[in-house]
Image 1 (cartoon, rainbow, N blue to C red):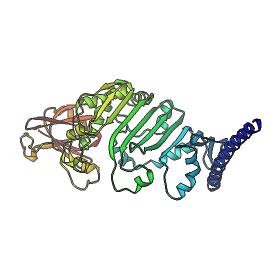
Image 2: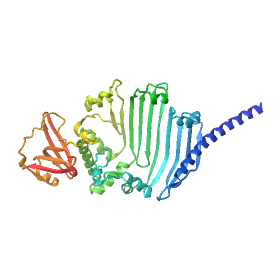
Image 3: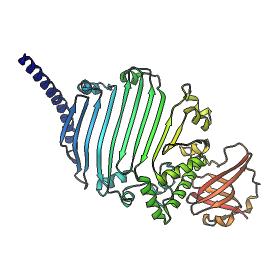
Image 4: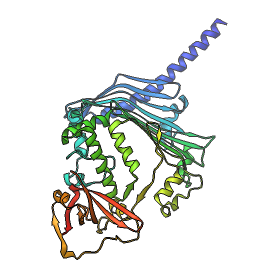
Length: 435
């Protein structure tokens, strides 16, 4: 009996050793190939290769040091998790046959890069474009009202108090063969900046990834959710930009929200005031932002272009919460001509008009009565008829109703009401008033 017991124990130990040895050997070979390919350019070091029977394999204590650049990228851990141990055994053959497992998650823990390193400077330079193009490009997630800063890079991050960039992420998918639901998830967590969590659930017709990749049937969106928790980034950004522009933080945030709204309107997206105010609150106070959609089951996605933006919002059952409070009004307006210009149809000179077929009720003055002025002089001509040309080639005609340091607000009269366009001074190439 004792011999049988010892035999079982020895077999179990041998199985564990064989599994870990096989998996470790495969990972070691892959790492050796990578190190050999990168040997002329960088030194790669790692501390340990680990694996587990739950289907996890990984490498810890990674350091990547380019020879020609000062600085080292350090990573605490990189791991891959499949459904179970047997899936790990099959992974190499499946990849060679271009077959995907039904579950896979790739994880990086604490990838850290000093902001004063030459590597960080090189990564920044890869994103640099012509200054004029970057200043005028439409980026709804960019930086507004911060002087010449439109993209946050190394120098800005260091001025905001960051000395390194640390990132952890988990990206993967899981197909449930019983419910035929494909779940795709992505978590990105940056130390002292914020955490982004995206989860998408798709209804599919197949019960395996192999058949799913070859089926002509498109998946159905069951649910999508994005949660973003600000970890202090926007608070630091608002302090930095307030100091740079010489105003109080709250004043900067109000100006940034106004510029953001104006930029959206320039590109055909008009939000209701509560959404703009939510943007302002989030920059000012941070917190948790939740955006989710649970579309109606009978949506014909090929026919969405026939519906208005608000109809689509309703059909998608869009919900937005800020710090737990549900936003009651998500209404917006889209102007296809302006949006077409943003998406590449910039060859035509599109006139900026209200989202209505009615013509402005402003009397058509003789053109000889309009005289050019500087944007800085606009405050002297409140309630004057005005014509404005933007650097995008678009034109606005209306009445000047307000002017501040950054924005000239022009109002058009249309049947049924008024429409206002906040126009950034830096985008105005010509402004003429009737006088």
